Picture 1 (tube, helix red, strand yellow):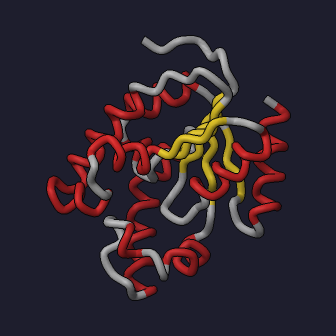
Picture 2: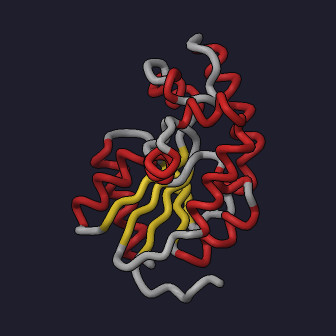
Length: 177
């Protein structure tokens, strides 16, 4: 059962490379919020890297771990939560997160995401190739699959530009809520 909002909870969603972790950590630190990254927590709980989980059981196993973790979140303080790029494809997860707090879609164009991801594809199992063209193609496919759920977020924030600019946009949204 989902409890009413008691604390200020910000949930960051978006494609790989959109800044969910870096923006989330920076915002949490600046505003004295706790920070929780679903990928990091899944790795701790399973004692496996995300890549190992994908190798073992594919995206289906990872999404199961992700769903189990997210549905077990019970905040005890103001918090920023970064969830995997595909978390919202699970309707139960989407509904839970929307009831839990303010879901924010960090939107970045595919070309910018490709530049950001070129050096980190080894850690991102849904991006199978290191060629810019393949990364771009993979990101386009992911976005098409996830776009309608991302747009169910409480707000969409342009996550392009400097971290300072993105944090300012996020703070502006939070101030209005």
